[in-house]
View 1: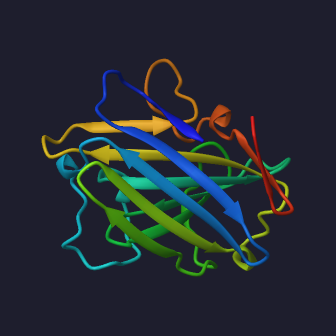
View 2: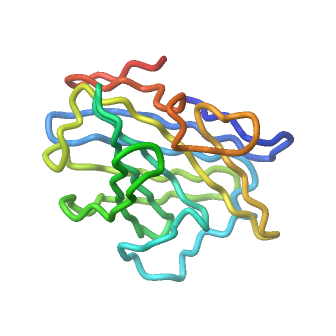
Length: 176
């Protein structure tokens, strides 16, 4: 799935590949462009960390079919991560404690960055869920580049219900 930039022009492109096995969900975020100009925070140790969205981060939102509440996962290039639960649109954000840390792997060269994320399906019942994928890229000048499946007109909003464009059921992803 190719994510849409919030602002044009941008020197970057972002796409995400999704796969499922019996035990895992796998996401590969691919950034193309001058990736050497991104701030990746590689010098920091990997931790469960707050406010990753202030840096280069890759996100996954999960909402079960029929629910208004959802989870937000954040993944960083230095393998830091976090997961939050919201009871409704941007309401009652709480750090989710009942998840296994994801496996995160970074592959980077001058013009392509790949962030591979592996989540355990046993942590959450992902079946019959709607997913949203997004990315924030922070370049060395401090400019943020926002990518998602959908952008409301006035500002980037990854939590917006129209971003939940992927339906996951069984071991299949259906892109709307």
